[in-house]
Figure 1 (cartoon, rainbow, N blue to C red):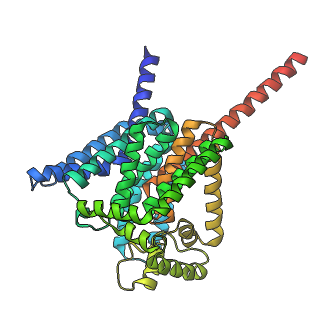
Figure 2 (cartoon, rainbow, N blue to C red; figure 1 turned 180 degrees about the vertical axis):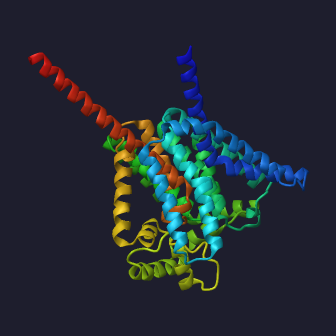
Figure 3 (spheres, one colour; figure 1 turned 90 degrees about the vertical axis):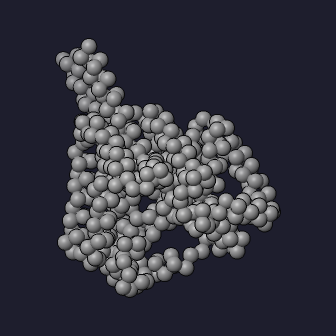
Length: 427
């Protein structure tokens, strides 16, 4: 009975950890919608609604703490201490205004580190995939209601919203993954709706992330069957040709829909003008980053690079949004050329070894999902230091690495015991 109860507690703890990680993905959609819905009827809630919603998330976190602490290992604790060390060092040698450090470090300690610790501790990846799929539908339902039914957000005025697009991106990524694992019409329709929402929000980064993820999963799933891969590429090539030949008609049709719904036509306009992949502002940022990285050979630490970039592109303004918008440059600016490149090499080695080459298909698919939402956005619009999904991805990498080391040690011990046994037999 005690063993049964212990297993029940362990399973319950695992469930709480999975729910907590899924809260990281879909809580912002639920909380934003619920608050705006409640305030339709009760305009002045004194933020009691906000307190209740965040208390629920905190309660789930408290229920998961014991299970997290039981599974955390020394290497993962050292990674956590490294993050704390970088925050302290960057603040000691500060170059930016205090508000920038407070904003970024709040994200790190309140959202990012918990995401890392939870991802490190999850072991049931079959259950995690089920909850991730549920999270995708929760995001899609709440954002569809907010955008098209209740029209809560300012998107209905035709503006573009990058934050909202990256909130919807996880739903698109998870649904694409679900299609490759077990094709269902409902998942296909949901994926198309999520793609439509991303297109209508006017930002290019999330669309690029979804496209990159689709190609990555297509290659990973079909690389063992080259015949299927060729057929898929041929079919999508034909679709691409048809779309290209009818591009003007498709854009005109979508523009009419977007106008009637009051959505942003920015992506459609850029596509029609052939400027979908050009960005003058990003060009200025990258020019400043190249100058800074050549001068600051040893790196400047977290957040400090934002003040230097700000001085080049927008003197006198807040530095909070003045990061490199490039994952590789971020590392070089923070750690310098030598240490930055070494850390990048180590990270991609862990990524390839523990996710892309993982023999467990469930772990691999979860890892691919978090590559789509945790790594790909860092190539366009985010910074890894306060991007919670990157911390979750890194958590999965360190967890898989720790498990591989444990299995290797167990195998060596077993071989050693077998050698001793054979020696005793011979004697």
